[in-house]
Image 1: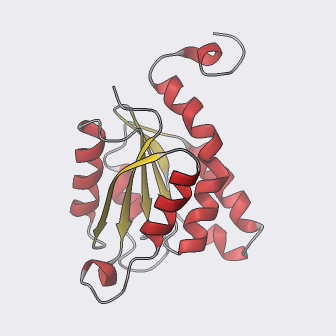
Image 2 (image 1 turned 45 degrees about the vertical axis):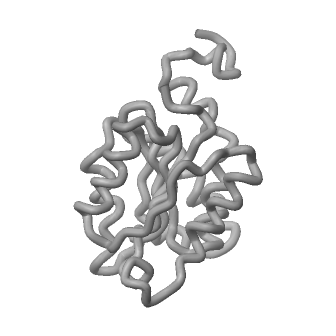
Length: 169
């Protein structure tokens, strides 16, 4: 069983993967998660290539590495922004409400939030969420949903609404 408060972070960036730029988004997300009581089990940087994104998500979800898998980057409208398509190909189910909430929160900071094409959904017992690549956008998006994630993970484990802190079965 995947520990409920364990996360993995996948930064999708051609430049960072080649060492041409420093990844500041991954460490910022890790610090944010750790400040909220999460353990970061993995942090990896990959280029904007669907196969690499899919391989990391499969490895972490199928291997039970983390209950929460966050990707950061590759969600825009650029020609190499393939994270949503790569993620969709490996999800079991989508969780559109989380994406709605992240974009609504993002609009409080910038009108560009609606340009993000990120997805959220499940694979095995992991919740996978695409975040923007900018450090601020990634943290703001994660902050918008982080309090809902333990409940979502409990539901995914079949614990029911009451066991997950809700009312009813």
